[in-house]
Amino acid sequence: MKGDTTSPSQSFSVKAPTVVFFGTSLTAGPGLEPEQAYPVLVEKLAAHDGTPIKAVNAGLSGETTAGAMRRIDWVLKNPANVVVIETGANDALRGLSPDSAKSNIEQIVASVKKRQPNAKIAVIQMEAPPNFGSPYMRRFHAIYGEIAERENVILMPFLLEGVAGLGTLNQPDGVHPNAEGEKIVAANVWKSLSPLVQELYSAR
Image (cartoon, rainbow, N blue to C red):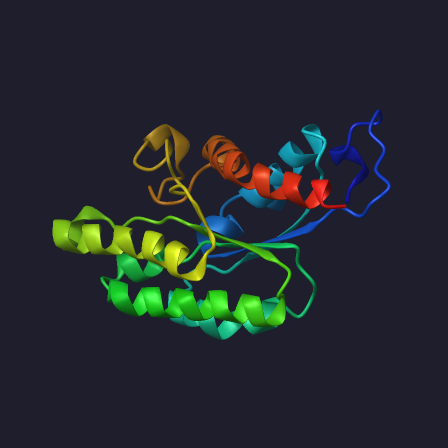
């Protein structure tokens, strides 16, 4: 970890756990400096709270759940203590089948369990835009809870809670958070991720 992410008053005798943020452009942070993307901000929040992590930004712009399913094995070549899965937004933007997205995400989770059997897994709730109608929105929303229950993984709240649709917190495309929006996203993520990281430290 970079030296500026941990308070000088803190001393750790164990290696910080690795958290892989596996996602789309919403994780990659296009239009921002690398240090402004939420995975780096989460790393800083974790250090501030005394439970430092090594954040790995494995976001890829434009990726659907099908693409993510094909890429996950490559991403997991290196060990991970926690894998946070953010995918599905691009499926929803294209009106792709929610049930197909569900199947793909379940296969992603299965790949994580196979390659990193000791890793904790969290899936981030994503939402569909309203242009495909309420039935599509409801079905898309539901798949994440179904995945979490079936696969016994953590379901994290909607990634863009408090940010989506607010012009002052998004880039001109209206989709990707700006630097201020990323701070809110990071706080959202860390609030849910923190208990998992604390468990890792307590188990040592």
